[in-house]
Image 1 (spheres, helix red, strand yellow):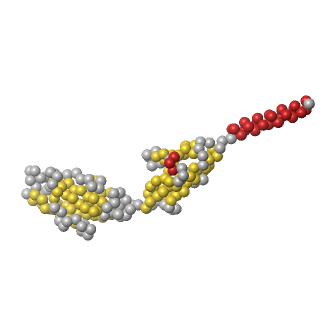
Image 2: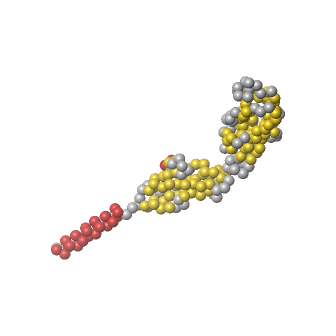
Image 3: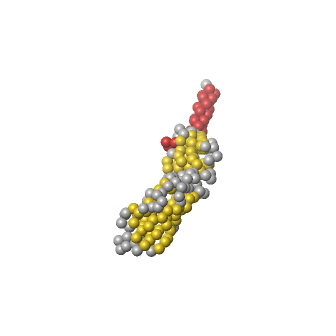
Length: 211
């Protein structure tokens, strides 16, 4: 009987030890990240990383040349949190699956319209009227005590294009700073750079100012 009790005691001890060891082992979770379309960019960490226990993971998508990161999709995308610094985070507390989506950057550097206003907000006639072909335009304007400057508004076809009016960067559809009118002929250049940073267009507005 004594020997039997000893066996039972040993078995119970073994069960307790195994239970303690089992409780101490952290669960393994896998983070799977697909890039779409393939070859458009990369994501850190790489897909297939294994984490032990709950882990807050920072996601850092990097677009290849000619591409831009757009959004997350996949079954775990609703759990992704934007850190507003170009990175995102996700709490890995189970197996997670994400898709990092990229899109091609635009090569569009075309304007759809140019407007010129005097300092009183009166639109000036642009010659020739804006069209899809011409890149040079002019206005004829009289400088007076009441009219002493103009502002230019450029409308890009692609809202992601960058616009320089003179040396000032201006949002599409927004007025430039006032440009003083100087008697004689002068010109204001409008330089439009496409989102991809490689393609551009140059427009010119010539000012024929008289007194």
